[in-house]
Length: 315
Ligand SMILES: O=c1ccn([C@@H]2O[C@H](COP(=O)(O)O)[C@@H](O)[C@H]2O)c(=O)[nH]1
Image 1: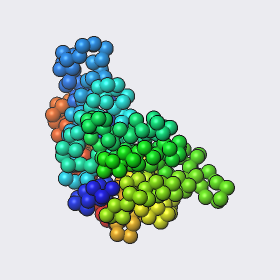
Image 2: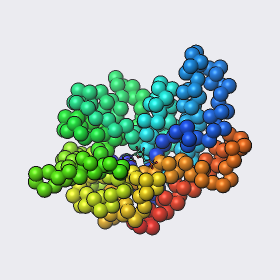
Image 3: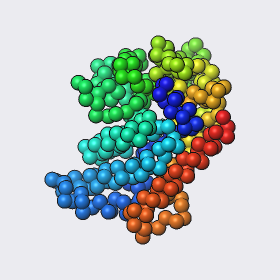
Image 4: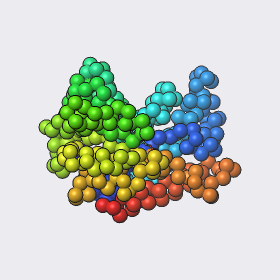
C-alpha cells in the first residue's frame, strides 16, 4: 500500500476515478465514428458491434486518463463493463490498465474475485502474471471474502510476491448490503465486523512504511457510521471507499473513514467523473466526436478537481 499512499501524498488527493464505461456513458458520436474502421478490420461481421463499442471505450478511457492524470493518484477500471463485450472488451481492459500505468497512475482492478483456494490461485495471477508475462499490469485487485481464508491466501501471497495490494469487500455500498453483512453473530458482533477482523489479520505480516498492510478493505461511503467504527477497528487496513457521488455519498460521509492524519482511505467516483459531460449544457448530439471528447476531457477534469477539493475541505 506504500506506493498508493505515496501517490496520494504526491497529488494531495485521496480519490480514485472509476473507469466504468457503458454505451450510455460514451458520447454516441465517438462510437459511430469508429464504424467504418471496425467494419474493415473484423473477420466476422457479427463481432463488429462489440469491437466497435470496445474501441470507443478505449478512446473514451484515454481521454479520461489524460484529463485526470496528475490530479488523481489512481484509477479503478471495473472489469464487468469490459468482460460484457467478450475478448475485445478484455483486450481494451488490459490496454486501459497499461495506458493508465504509463501515465503514472496506480491501477486498481475492480474484479471482485473469490473462489476455492486452487481457483483463487489462478485468479491471483492478475497480480503476478504467468511465467514472467504480466498481461494485466494492475497494482491491486478487489476480492470477495465469502469463501474465507483459503480463498484469500493466494491473493495475499501473490501481493507479497509482486509488491502489490488487494482490497477485500467488508461493508459494501449497495442498498441490499445489510441482508448479510449486518446479520448478528453469536458473540454479539455483526458479520461485516467479523470480516473486518479477518481482513486485519490477513494483512498483519505485510504492514508497510506508512503503517498500512497490503490487504485493504472496501467500505461504502453510504455507511458513514459503520465506516468510522471500522476505521478504529482496523488500524492497519487501508480503505477503498466507493459510493461517493452517484450513490449519494458525500465528503462529510467519508470523513470518519480517514485516520487522524488524513490518511487511511481513498474514495472512488466513477459515473460522477466519467459521466460529467452528460450534465453539461454545451453537449449537443450534433457535435463532432472530437468536440464531444474535448468536452469529456474538460468536464471530467473539472469533476475530479471538485471532488479533490471537497475531500480536502473535510480532512
Ligand atoms: O461496495 C461497493 C464495491 C464496489 N463498488 C464499485 O465502485 C464503482 C462505483 O461506481 P459509481 O458510478 O461511482 O457509483 C462501481 O464500479 C462499483 O462496482 C461499489 O459501488 N460499491
